[in-house]
Amino acid sequence: MVSSELIPAHNLALDRDSKIILLVIDGVGGRPNSVSGRTELETARTPNLDALAQSGVGGLIHPIARGVTPGSGVAHLSLFGYDPIRHAIGRGAVAALGIGLKPAPEDLAVRVNFATMDDSGAISDRRAGRIPTERNAELCELLRKIQLDDVAFTIDPVKDYRAVVVFKGADLSEKLADSDPGQNGLPPRLVEPLVSDDPKAERTARIANEFIRQAREILRDLAPTNSILMRGFAHPVYLPTMREVYKLKAGAIATYPDYLGVSRMVGMDILPTGGEIADEMNTLEQHYADYDFIYFHVKKTDSAGEDGNFDEKVRIIEELDSLLPRMTKLQPDVLVVTGDHSTPATFKAHSWHPVPLILTAKWSRRDSVQAFSETECAQGALGQFPATEIMALALANAERLTKFGA
Image (cartoon, rainbow, N blue to C red; front, side):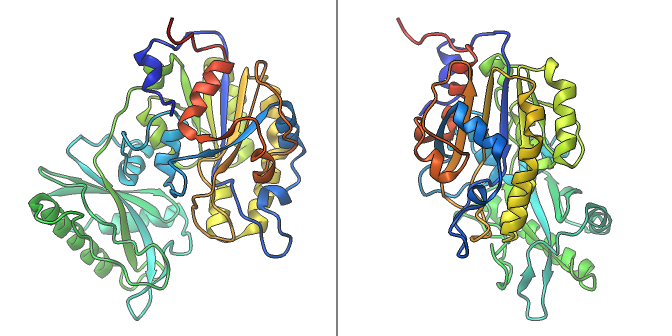
């Protein structure tokens, strides 16, 4: 496995006048539906993505390891070349950094979902109908009335139904299980220590469960947002920057805070943008000349996949394809198109399936891939490989890596 650790350790990175764009279509990988027998990518009309596939080289990536379903944060860390096993990051820390918070190393951040609880005590909707962010902010204001012993906290909206709580105090442990049951129809779990006989974890679990108890009391009559779920307890992590590791001035274009959080962890500049793909293209065109590397993220494919909306995921892929000429017109030295993970609409969740990838560059070898799809990329010359190797491939094709060894 080639990861970012190898490159600075052996002085391989070169500072050259070349540009790389990494286009990440969130959750792009899919599975065939029962009607057509085709995936979302195979169903979508994508002449521009297919033209890229025909001009470059393809393959399939594994974000973490074969058979392992990744979370978005660690999957992106892998795309950026950082070993996600060695550099463990939690969703809470990603969410906090994503909205611009700067928690101290001892602070504990956790992602919060506003959720719907039915009369039986089961969670009927883990996302509370994807409430608007404005309503989220109102609910966060209500929850600031919660009072806890021996620990302070902040709670802030992230986006839609997601918020983040940062507990501030000494001896807080991140070794806690989520309260999120992971699917609708089940009761929420208690927050419990992941290991036994850990006083710090036991104390922190009591704090989290008391927060949840008071939150449910405050929200009791406010269906569909009458409960909260906690997931991803984590202390903040700050990693070596992409400038230090790769000698790249890097910028991030994304509409969802979590992806900005991972970008901040690796030292990217955040390039403000609007909520649509066209807005992101405007931002890319505005800032392209100022950066060596731009990470460009498309979110709504993943949301459609999680909702089981096959047709909507197809539509978003087609929308991106129609706008892609604005990106290719910039003529980056290297353009990589892939996803952070698969989110098949037939599965309604992240999955372990490998993710298609195409790379186009002056120095890339063409292969027989004719379209950007799972089946076509499976035949690509790059084969199946860990996502941590993408950055080395991109740097090499941008002539930004020197020879290794004598």
